[in-house]
Length: 445
Image: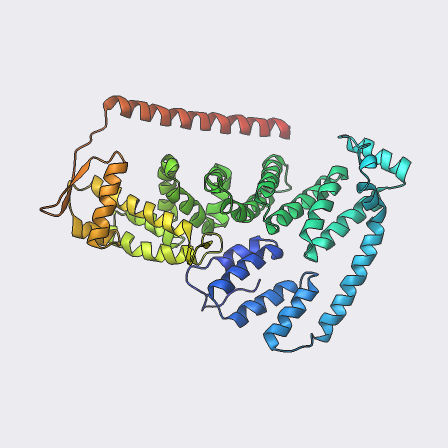
């Protein structure tokens, strides 16, 4: 994808994310940007054509060209390119036909076993299908993907992996299957493919550590489609991105991914321990990478700048609603809302309130309402509801218009248990890292 110029919409991460995606995965992002009208429609169409020129989706490219230049005729080079694609598709279809016919025969497929070498022998002896036809199936599946037939590509790539004995080719097919499931929005199946890829990436011996890090970066970028469309995705993204190897890859090569980890931590109330650990990462990165959501957390937990946090909340809202992964709209009757934005703002106010309360014993309601970006009545209702539904030890003095915090010193035994749990977790982590290192050294020998 071409680099977006200096007039890019505020906080748009598309130029950073797109280079780490398959070009087909960039199309949903461009559709979102077009719907949100973040860029001129003409510019979006040009980017689409630029992407399509490197695929086999020629008909789609021709339609966009006609729309962009207001013409009924496609350029001659596109017409010629279409003829080439059709001819090549027919040729690959013929080459893969024997194996495709075999795979479409349920009785024949039942003869196959988990042993790939046995399967290859059966195919060769009984059906005269050899390595050439298996390779043809891969090329046919890949071509189908480039044509935009993601369903067909997913099926053929799955079948290819059951027969392929080349680990590199099998890994390539798995990436293709993963992309196909994402593009078809089969989130549960895509999550299964993600876990398969992660297992391979973490266990595979790469030619260089850089290649392994790059594979992790690709996996994290592709996973954004799943995690923000899956019911449990906000927990799963924390589990993946917060692992040492993946977090190190983010910090060294893809700091823009911190936006998504930070967002998941903010809206996930059960992950406060991980949030505390993440604050240390923010302290390391706050001067090297700028993002409103990262800066919001820095304002509250690092700098205790509540005025700055209030300003950042507005920027965070804009960043979320204009982000292809975070800004998903849901139609509710005659209204359109962004659920993640609403959850984010609610939890962001809670962070401001809790932190502010920890350093003040008596708080002016007018001041607090201002810091929460609410009017006085809204702030009062919000705080009353918070006191009722949480263990917050506070009360509202209506006469003076203040919130009075009750002292709540933690029990010494609770502190001891908390610190012991944290120590146990760190010890387990160190032992795991030591055993992994020892196993790596043993394998190297």
